[in-house]
Length: 126
Image (cartoon, rainbow, N blue to C red; front, side, top):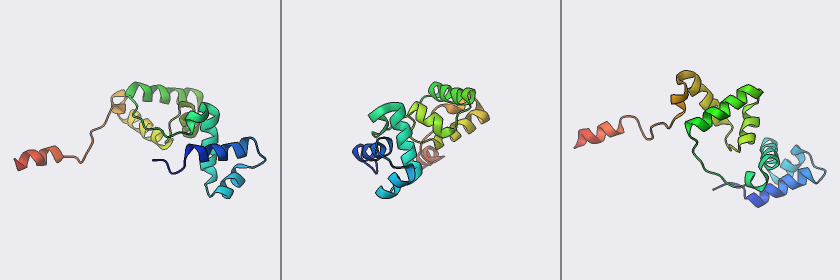
């Protein structure tokens, strides 16, 4: 569940876009970080109301690679790339990039879940 509702986010975005408030003043009046307001505005401008609603998703290796290639080709920052593709966590792009450089396209695929070796411990107990 999101900390802020889509309605609240939209009101903050509207106060910046259609009012006379800066990022900082819109943020401080509502107890939100200015960087968060900047992110909401970028998401709204790129994707409309859908950019402000909650999102949960997993991305396949081909999508991750296409995102990275566009980021490199156009010289975009992580934040700009995340806003462009409606990826909520811009920080994950750094992880994708690091994994790609370490292991190529295969490294962008799904990773094993859980604690390492947990399957072996279960087998040893039986």
